[in-house]
Image 1 (spheres, rainbow, N blue to C red):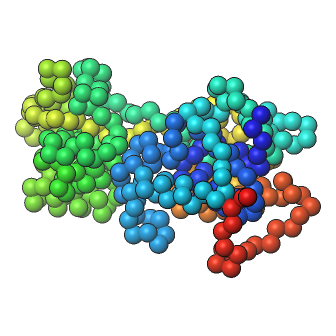
Image 2 (cartoon, rainbow, N blue to C red):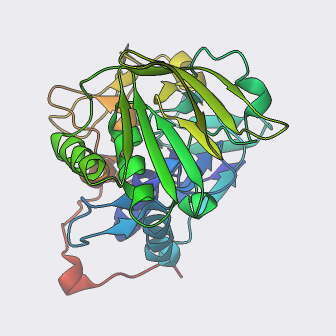
Length: 337
């Protein structure tokens, strides 16, 4: 049995920052994650994608943000159970929780912080007959390292933020050629990204095919041909090294959905007026996994939620002890001996 003060389910950026805020209150944490390494989406899906909305940091790669968070929490010596998802929660008579993983490892604490992001991600795949035979052989649904596409002829399908952001990024000196295919004339992405992509299309940096859709793909073992239909020019065949159908990822809560929590639209309902607690005392949900009126799914909002949540967790660990807020500029950051 692993005993701690807060069991954190999810080792993404919000889960990692929770360790820091809890450590300032001398609360110990243990993180559980289904992925084999910390970092969540930032490590698994887009480690090389730049992030621009972390306060005080104009630009940082997602993987570097994870590394910095891990360095920040080193003094507090958190425990990790990785590559082994939490499956079951049991509540004891003395207000403790026992979390059991798929491999049977048990963890006990008076507090649980669910920081599971959007859950398990499943890519939305287009209805192309040959898709499966070219997965990993030119067809990818996420970009982990843009260097894999350096000097390549890349075709991207999609009209959301991910498709436009990566088309812009790869066209700026990474890929030799970038073609963006979208089945409509309008995009679902941020207006700034749409405008930038349009400008790059006018200058020839991106080839943009609108009102177009991929119908089949081909190649001799590796992807080489993409066959599509267009509203303006009928059938077209493109040569390509890679096809990235970036239609988004469908999140699934997984076992969390069976833990007796109030769920709304694949997210956990919480009380945002106080401490982001769920309908079960001692269980909190922070970051993208939760929902409440006015919720914004941003990393910085998750950091704020974690900060308030640990104040409530402190009271459950030390019900007779008063916590006095101390600024780190005065008290510093002291780890555990």
